[in-house]
Image 1 (spheres, rainbow, N blue to C red):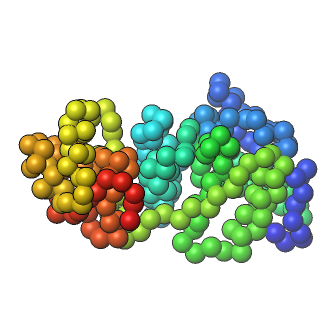
Image 2: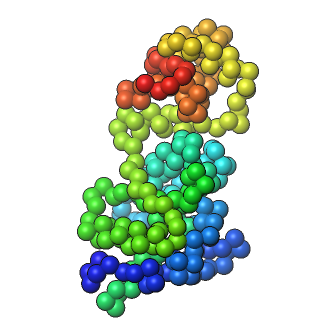
Image 3: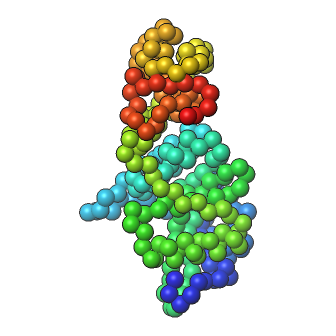
Length: 242
């Protein structure tokens, strides 16, 4: 940041409380604010003429809706939802604010989540990081040290990994899950075998069985090779990932 790094005393955090009231405190006083439970500071909107995407990414583990303002943010939300260590999470619920050399600056991290009982402030790395972005990360590190937060920088999945995760994401909902069918299908994967063969062995309808297998892979009850395209002909197995 031009003019030197800011101190924690120069950083404020702005957010909406549980009742929708705007609040602003010095960052050192924000350590106990449950940002992971709060609404976005502002609802994202698409920018005309720019590549942007607004969607509600449902968090299957916590039944929360995350309003994502870009595809990169939404793709990182998929990774968060598949991470068993992540609990409650919120999209862009806070904004850090500070001034330097007469200019006001702000930083709005993509997510705040609880991971292992600790509050984690998450930024999504841009496709082309700039000097400004690097400087903002330094300010965030100062703020996090004062508030007791952890900081994490995420990069969205791409290519085959993203294609596979989106297939699994579509089958993530446990609401339609029949536990007896899930147990029956999972037993077919005691050793590696194709999804199609396991579904046939479990005597399940093909479409139902494949979706159920994808759900079990999403939930990490089954594993597969995520570096190649996921299809009903893909092998899956129980036990440890390989």
